[in-house]
Structure formats: C-alpha cells, structure tokens
Amino acid sequence: MSSGGGREAVFPTRQSLGAMKSKLKGAQVGHDLLKRKSEALTKRFREITRRIDEAKRKMGRVMQIAAFSLAEVTYATGNNMVGYQVTESVRQAKFRVRTRQENVSGVFLPQFEAWQKEDVGSDFQMTGLGRGGQQVQRCRETYTRAVETLVELASLQTAFVILDEVIKVVNRRVNAIEHVIIPRTENTIKYINSELDELDREEFFRLKKVKGVKERARAEEDAEAAAKQKQRTGGGDSDKENDGQKSSNSNGTEQDQGSKNVLGDDGDEDLIF
Image 1: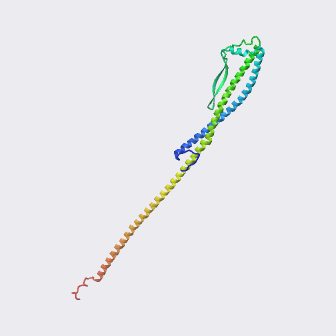
Image 2 (image 1 turned 90 degrees about the horizontal axis):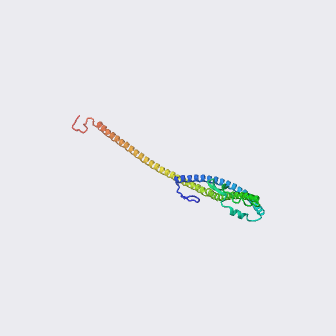
Image 3 (image 1 turned 30 degrees about the vertical axis):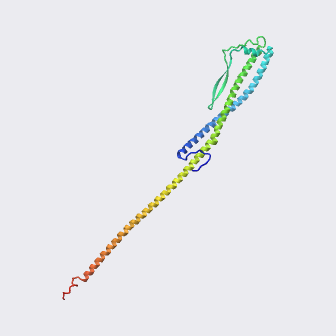
C-alpha cells in the first residue's frame, strides 16, 4: 500500500470512498454557506463603519453645540451651580435606554435605543427662573440630542466589535475548509481510487492466470482422453486383423488337405488298382 502526505489515514475500500465523497460534498456546501455568510457580514460591517464615521462626526458637532450651550447657561445665570442643582433635583431618570437584538446571518447584534419615560416629571423646571431660563432649556435639549447620539454611537461600536470578531472566525473557517479540509479530502479520494484501481488490476491479472491454468489443464485432459480413445480404437483393429489372418490360414489348410486326399486313400497301402 502506497503512502502519501496531505491525506487522511483511511483504509482504501468502497465504503471509505463513499464516506470521503460525502465529506467532500459537505465541506463544499459548508464552504459556500460560510462564504456567503462572510460576505453578508462584511457588507454589514462596512455599513456600520460608515454609520460610525457619520455618528462620530455628528457627535462632535452636537457636543460642540452642547458645550457652547453650557457656557451660555453659566454666563446667563452668573454662577456654576446649575449642574449641581440639576444633579440634586433629579430623583428618577427620564431618559432611558432599552436593548433589542438584530439577527444578521446567524449573528445577534445588540441594538441600543434611547427613549424618554413620559410619566416622570422634570424636577428642575424652576432652574433658571430668575435669569437664564431660556438658555437652560436650550442646553437641556442640546444635551438630550447629544445623549441620543451617544447611545446610537455605542450601539454601532458594540456591533462593530462583535462583527469584527465574528468575521475573523468565519474567515478562518472558510480558509481552513478551502485550503486544508477540501485538499486533504480530495487527496484521500485520489489515493483510494488509485488503490482500488490497483486492486482491480491485480484481481484481473489473477483471474487471467487462473483461467490460463484451467485452460491448459483442460487441454491436457482432452489430449489424454483422445490418446486413450485412439489407443482403444487401434487395439480393436489389430485384434480384428489377427482374427482374420487366423481364419484365412485355417481355411487354406483345409483346402490343401481336401485337394490332396479327396477320397482319403493316400495312406491306405492295401488298395490295389
């Protein structure tokens, strides 16, 4: 049995050949599915990357506007106690975040969504009542948009990290199937086919030799039987010839005796004529 590298250690049989063909077909189907999955994830990854870039640009602009709004509030109120007052006056969060999952080719990506609870009242509505109330309200709205943008950016960044890891794993699997599993299986199938062909040739040569031996044995038996038959046929002819010669000799002797002594008086000396 020949040996080679880059194949699986299997015994070359028809059953092993069928198993390897089934494995090769499954590997090819799995490779196609993983390839499509990788393409879908890569497409979504590029889309998320584009949205992250837009969200970061938007976040920069919103935070810039929010910083100017806070500076306006500080200037309008004349003190830096606005942040402290807001923090002390809040008892329950009105701005909240909920999560949901999105299925992208079998990968669940978390989606963060910002929403406001309506039944929660604003405890700092009286902030800036003396002066700067308009600037405080505008600053509040600006920071609300900033938090919404921040939640969107956090959702995109989380999906980005998850997709990055999943795409690496899927690509590794695709490369392993394409460059390791499929070539090893194909080499194994070639090896099994070559071994089975060699066994078929050996079996054909063996049958041919056995047939030749049987034909020679049959020819020898036929020749021996023909010789025995010929010998038996030749022996019967010689016996017939011997019997014919004996019968002819006896007939000639009797004729000679009859011709010599017809009356039977050759040996009688007493007869006088």
